[in-house]
Image (cartoon, rainbow, N blue to C red):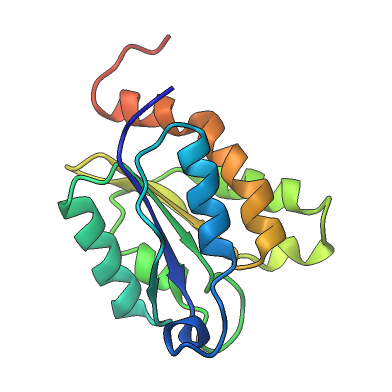
Length: 162
């Protein structure tokens, strides 16, 4: 379908320290590759505003057009992925995050606790979507993102509204 560049950034202190295996990142990578996106293995970074902001900026500077983060969207003390995402995106696309929370209710009532964001990084035109860290949230969320990602990227580049 597409061969646009994508990446997955796993945000987890424990996975970054090697204390816990990253299970969500590889699921997201596999789903992106299966859908035809060019996606390297997931990058693992520690929780924190600056680590998230820096990783998003690096990905956009490399020309990545779809950036998925997994983890750090909850209400724990180190869950700061949205705070790291907000200063990097120039335009929010709230409907994606709303749909991820809504559809997540089929798996768990706790999906409403996700504070994840979705938005565009201009001028690069990259779409960023924060997914929760659970494997179920990643497995059910990536297809939702894939349903609109190519269209959004086309629109950001000036494509027709067809």
